[in-house]
Length: 432
Image 1 (cartoon, rainbow, N blue to C red):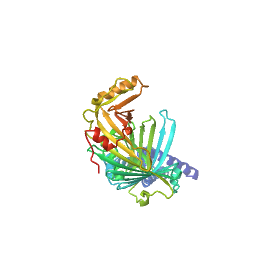
Image 2 (image 1 turned 90 degrees about the vertical axis):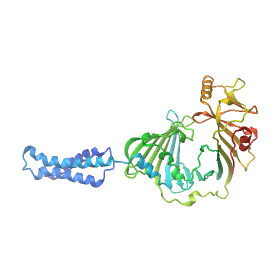
Image 3 (image 1 turned 135 degrees about the vertical axis):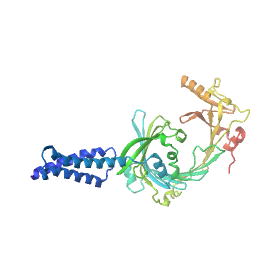
Image 4 (image 1 turned 45 degrees about the horizontal axis):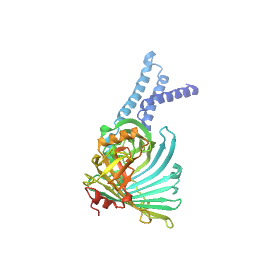
């Protein structure tokens, strides 16, 4: 065989190999040593007709066919074994082993017509127990530069009933220090302060049953074969006032470690949001000074103290009057339409003369929700107000997508949250 023919035959052989290996493409990541074994058999098959032309007619094709068949069997066996990929339970098992966590978050916001509005890039660090840090960057290049080019830093320190947040703004050298104290009389905390941050971030995924997930195929992520799962985030986890949240999670096919997460939802402003979590690293040592609560010398500091209370089986005291409806007209709702008081919040800024702010959140009964919705649909320009025990009037604010929740600013009463509880609520919370 001439060199020209050998080159032509080798090209055909390589082309046939590529076409044959397409059988394995639905499951990516075929090992190179297996490809080499398959190719060697195809090479042997390609040489057989040259070396053994003594086989007459159709019998000459059998060695070639047998060899190619062996290569196909190798592919099929590999594909069959690779299909025994991880299950959702394997992913959940791996998440239980997490104690430190680092990842990059990219959050894109667009209009309901798809026009881009903003893109935010964060580098996030979690360490148990109760430490977290995220850094906001202008671009991915700034993240990868290795230099502190962040636009904002948030540092969190959490305990069972206390949370501290330090925000650092390098330009204009300003810091905000917020302390939050959580109270409850038995109701699960709305903003639950986790102690083990890295673990609690995956608590959501550990509570999703396998039958609530759907396999969506396989792909290569960071050079690793990954299996994808799709599911809806349960409404009880939605504390960001978002609509329905659709999630995709991609985990390593061999070990179940999470490699990539994508969330899609519509926020309270009706904008489309896509959040991606990538470059995920598990249980890698983190520098302890990442979580230091230290304000650089010379920076301006503003402090905020917040009380956040969650109420269970709490209503208004007998004789209390609440009326909700259009200003100057007959009320649409009364005290009896309130299912309960569910939340209270008090915010003070001790370094300023700004008066404290106090808000409460009530939950309406289903029939009251429908009545209020029908009126608002028929009278979209009419202002709805709430008369709080004939003392002050306030404009109720809806809470996210839950139309049964209404929030009121009661700061003008000049009462603390604890005083408000004692005077108007059927339940008070013991404060430490």
